[in-house]
Length: 547
Image 1 (cartoon, rainbow, N blue to C red):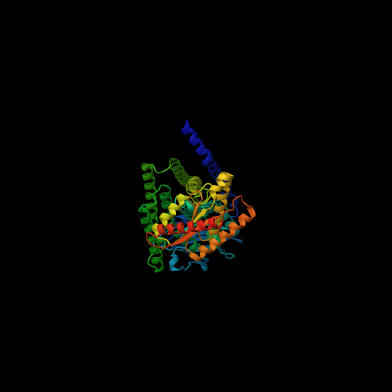
Image 2: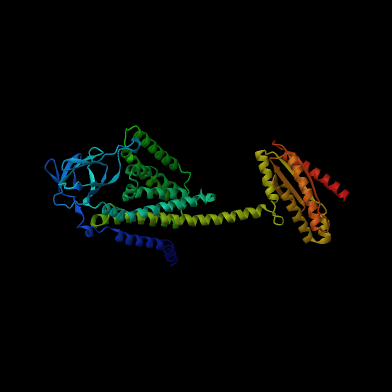
């Protein structure tokens, strides 16, 4: 029963909001799926009926490999104020109407960008009275098939509207994933004290790269920027670096930060990037042709992720709730891929090549990991607060709130270990026993507190004050000399006089003092403390005689 209650709580706390996201996405997907039947009278589909020079007739989606020239008749097509609209992928295109070339798309790209321009949208004007259109297609890569999709004669505005109408739901999801990544990076910068325990940076960067990479398929960025080659190049860069981030995140949450696998994967990613950029710049290998190495690194990263989880599970260093969260997130991502495959195969009016539910699955995974990190961040903040409180209690004098004798012993050990140069100031309150005996311990405590605050304020700029006994104080002044200490002591005497004048305690406050330099050599601290103590007692006797 307890286990059931735990799972019910997990479901209600984590998954119900995510199920709402999935439901909203389904509704948006249904509403935003273009209904081509509405525009049937305004759109002429040119997918099939293309005649090649060898006498064969082809469909645009089933063209043979290599260069090809195909022609389609426009005699019975309404071409008034319309264009031939389609999208292409890595294919150079020349369009001729009735034998006259009017359009050509064969961009010359910088070597570093590679030969691939990715996906591009074409809207070719049709000359008045044109009776046929001839397309000469040249695949950028040898042995590949020319890739054209959704070839039709239609209004350019309607075609662009369909692209935005079909691409915006997916694009919005991509940007939502990237936005989650940005928020996690912000959390990482605001959680610096726990950064080595809670790796917001890796998961945040991973979400940003996934969002940018998956936005490539929506065509929104290509249409908006009119620079498809830049979008494709950024897409390839995302694939190069995306392998390291989930492994870094998993190593962090499974306490495997020092594993040798992390630097190995980092080296693989770095070599992949360097080789890709160098070979592309020298025009030896194309950026796209180097994708195999990125895919290999991603496969290696997946194996490392599973390995880290398995080792942590075996050693019981991974939280079971987190393991369940990872399994749920991965299941959602896999189900998203499966739904998109079914959708593409059986629902013909869906967005071609859409990976809407895959993105939903990835979004759920990222949100679940974010929830885990937020909980871990809160837990670490609470533990850190408790730890700081315990340290404060252990090293703080309760009455005066100065550092106590234990803190002074820690400082002594540091001075000896680091051989620090400093000035030791010994201080003592005169007549405290008289105050306690005659006026009570409450007045004695007031006397001690007032003296402690005066000592602290006088030396705050040059050292740290410690209460080491009932009426005994020590100041360790670092990175200063005798002149600065003498100035602080003069300020102390002035503060004592002001206090006695304004507060008029029954026994005037007197603070005796003495100081000595501690040189950065071995065994000089004890000598400095002894000398400062002797000078302090000399001052005390002189003040009592004067009183």
